[in-house]
Image (cartoon, rainbow, N blue to C red; front, side):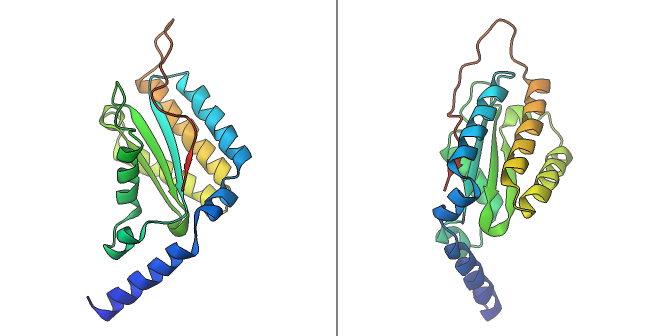
Length: 174
């Protein structure tokens, strides 16, 4: 490994080790978690999809040493949180990594096949403005509303049926 690569990974590791779950809980306090959970539940009443929110302070060290991206972590969390395991393959993960100010949206194949990549990219860019200014609730709410609109358009709730809640509504903090 070249000295400059080692140095950049070491800097990245220190930035990530500087932040921990306490920083996540400061950015997303319990009252906000409760409000986000209610918003997810209300959203899921309008469509057949499932939405999870995950906010992490930092990447695990193993991700940093192998130079993994926030996208790779979001994909891993998508699997770990079983967002892929919905009846209509229409789960969505909204992922925020505080240490890198990174935002990722991972949609299962049922929805991602219907939404062009440019639309996801534009959504992430809009969220980024709020996050860079420390307005986490505003950014997450905006993302939730935009994802909900896509799910309502492509997977509306069937009239007269109750949408089973396949995944927990509470945001995951790490």
